[in-house]
Length: 368
Image 1 (cartoon, rainbow, N blue to C red):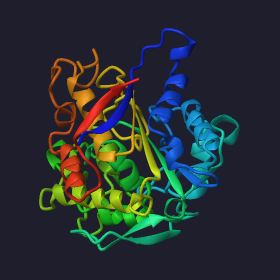
Image 2 (image 1 turned 60 degrees about the horizontal axis):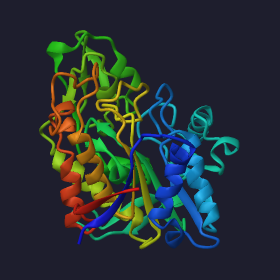
Image 3 (image 1 turned 180 degrees about the vertical axis):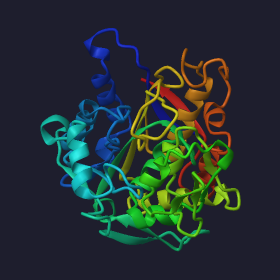
């Protein structure tokens, strides 16, 4: 049976069709009041964006979600976890500073902000999943102990996962650094012929796994944790995947973590995905490129696999943005993320998610 995925496009003709109004209607369509009941401590899982990034979901829109939770009787709070890589969200102090600078202050977004895994990423619980790669997964207590959750995702490309949507948001985003490390089963290597010896990768590596040898960067594989920060920051895109490791393992581990993030909350999780500013790279990057396709709209569902499939299909159907990274390289109907990151297979998330019972890729798009 097809899962309903509710969809609002980005056209606004009057105040009754503003983006704010559309979010309210989507939350009503997906029946937020069924997932959130009186007194529920409700985590709103959202990405606050890395310093320098501006593609994350606006706190103005996030406030409408908080208002909806409160109207349903819940007690909303915005939450994310500390990062594995070095950057502006590596610990709770820096993370909160970044969130506030990006507008995620109670006065703007309408609810408290919590770093779900504590000061340095050690506040978590182990959740049983009994799957192929993990018997248990590590989930930040701010999410593990929440009564309900609204997952607000920004759909975009991703260096390793192909694309980042609801599945990646709850998998990486609900895990502390130790959980992120467990998911990153892949490693990176430097293609020395293209290395210009700038040293950027050396500076950003959180594990000091990269050193300069003969004016070329070299990654010590035994120290690499696969966080991809070096690949994201490399100005010449000389750093790529080390194919001695298996990318499919990374995808499967990530999806198993996604299931662990929600398995204890049946019927208590709602997903809202913004298929807008579909940039080539994750919001973890300290920049935001031009969107690869025009803004498509906003989706809502109770199924993370269905909503990711719907978002992927919207992007696939769209024409590339003039002047964007894929302009002249793809056509409507082409896999945009496969073109952006040819070493990846984003749809593997959907296939494995369906296999382990995370959700269904069969959906019905319901326009509101």
